[in-house]
Structures are given as structure tokens and as C-alpha cells.
Image (tube, rainbow, N blue to C red; front, side):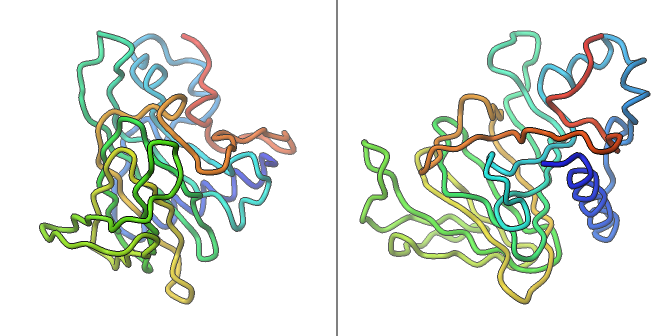
Length: 225
């Protein structure tokens, strides 16, 4: 992705967050220049990859496949100094964008529609071989349990949520005509380097073409203290 595309995407997410009256932690406002001056007091942000993030899955089609996100808090199973067992994110999808089919080996998460349009989440159980299972999927949504056939798209309107369990394939897309969406994610600790199993092999972080200065550093770009 071009840096200019990333900058535009981050500003659009920022505007949607303001529209939904959600307040971000201070580190989300640090400029790249300010990050050069931050010492070890912000190691938790660096070590646990908090902050701004972009994914296009390495496909180069961000307008349709990919989204913007912020990790607000996170633990770290690999470093004993961080004892949080939970994580929280915000995800932003413009109309026409989607996330690809995947599951998590370890992480259980709630996906919450925090505002805007509607999101459609397609669900499958996984076989032991990592294929789609032709079995009904048990859905837990806002205190309600029910089952749906494999491949069903669960519709989340603003305020609605779904619990996604390990080995439960899911993707999501904005319902056509409903407008941009701000999602929340509350989960166990997040590790995007090892805990994602994509149905079709692909990447997680974009390769960046530097065509302008960064508006914000991404969570995998922080300078060392």
C-alpha cells in the first residue's frame, strides 16, 4: 500500500471514531516525531503492538479486502511482565470493504457493532484438517444462543455482538447500502503474528510504498527506546 492510502484510511477511521463519540487513549495521538522521543515508559505499547494498524492481507486491494484498526489494550503470553489476559480493539470498515475468512487457534473474541451501518459475519466450524465443516454453528449473541447452518451470514446492527470461538471460521463485510461501520473487539490476548489461520494463505501486514510522510506510525513501526 502507498503511505498516502494508509494516511487517508487512518484519518477516515479517526473521523468515524469522533462521529461515534469514542475517546482514544493518548498514545493514539502521538506523531511520528513524538515517537522518536518516547522512552521505555511506553514499552507496553511497543511490545504488545498497541495503536494504529492496517491490513490489506498483502493482496493490494484495500478498497475491497482489508480494513483499519486500533489495538487499545493487550496482554502478551510471551512476556511475563505483562499479566493482562485480555485485549480490546476498534475496527473500521468503509462500505465495500471486507475481512477474509479465518479463525484463531487460541483467541476467543466478541465482535461488537459500535456504530454506523450493519456488518455481516459468515460463520463455519472447522474440520481437523482446517476445511469448512458441514455442521450447524452454535451462535452466542448478546445473551442468546441459537444454531445456524454452515455458511450463514449473521447480521449485526449497531449495538449487536457475536462471540467467536477458537477454530470458528468467520469473515465480515459491510452490508451494502448501510454505510461505514465501527466495530469493537473484546477478546483474550491478541497475537497477530501466530494466532491467525486464514482459509486461503495470505499475509497480515502491508508492504508500504513511501510516497508521503506518515500521519501516524503503525503498531509494527515504532522506533526502539
